[in-house]
Image 1 (tube, rainbow, N blue to C red):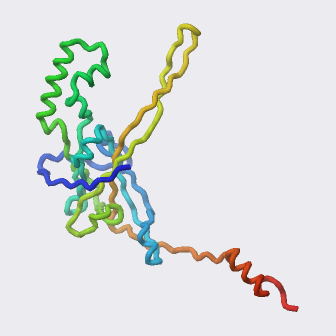
Image 2 (spheres, helix red, strand yellow; image 1 turned 90 degrees about the vertical axis):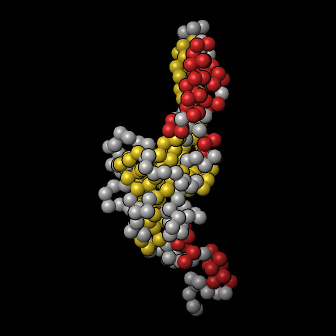
Image 3 (cartoon, rainbow, N blue to C red; image 1 turned 135 degrees about the vertical axis):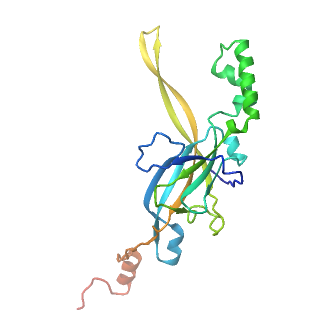
Length: 239
């Protein structure tokens, strides 16, 4: 898991508005939001009074981790707390325009020379057009909901710092493909391992902080029981 502090200072006028739908009926999932109630704040245990808060984590696909390491992917809460500006890449791997021929022949070994030339032209245009490389979205929260970057964004708890920490991890899965064996006449399943990089960032929902009632552990330890026995106390009755 990689976590990088990403900050963005680019113009917000080009941001595309996306309504965040926590009922999951929307068809436009630039990010996949998950609302979690009652998330315990670890630091609150230090004071002896644990607290919880409602948290929203936004997950998204990461087509190319190199752009993440270059800090080109970022998220920041807008000043009113009602929306988040999210900068991410379009789903075009960096190899598409950095290693044109190699990339094309990997996915299409039968590509003709004319296809390679056309691919190279398209890749060259993409490398020049920033609009095709990066997208800026304004993630608009449900009506009346505002969020903050406290608790889940270490280093950005200051009042004037609204940036969010971006984290990226790789999940492993297996794709199964049916392959017919002409020798045996049997159809078998071929397993293909695949890796997928995903990113996420989290915020806390305003006005959801609650104090938790910690249960008192009244159970006696084995050490206490052994000490009672040595000292003649414990469960033995008086003669």
